[in-house]
Length: 271
Image (cartoon, rainbow, N blue to C red):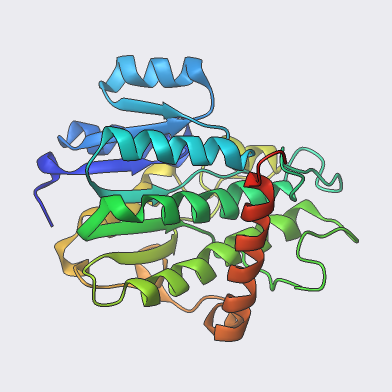
């Protein structure tokens, strides 16, 4: 990879938690950080604090993801690393089903579908030896393709765990697509119940620090030993096995077709 001081690194969900820690660390190491968020005030503070480039988009609207991709394609001629970190937890009321602005189950839309679409739009910028790092979770639950958006029997944690499995499935698919190009894609569970607003909102007691999760994520972003490593899922710094559905090519194909259909419907003129 290029020296870190020559790299352009996009981090989604960079205004708090793990994303903020990553943006801070990488900016201090001299990388050109592009920090994404949805709150303009937080982005201004981050820009003033770190001197990073900022971009705004609400990942609950695929039209905003599309606009963000257009903006980055116009501003830059390459990206060295894309970190898909933006996400939401199970919600204040896990029994209350929520939808995105496009009418898609909210956790599936924000945690998975936005990053899926953004990554595919930005592939022209991800020139070898670029890296794609998807921040997933060890909490993974099989996707029921008869009811992928949990229209019945909704539970926020189930929705969250399905969205995280979808990220891992996409990572494996993408790595296969990029095989031989010199661009890699990996996913990780950074740390268990980090001390973040998402974890506290879910009523969990933090057991890991954000710094622990950042160390594992930074390894996938920066370590030379991972040159050429692709299509892997890591639990912290250890290679691990994801949910069995992630290794099923037919399930990954069904997810890909569903994702493309949802995106096409959301972005259809007049939708």
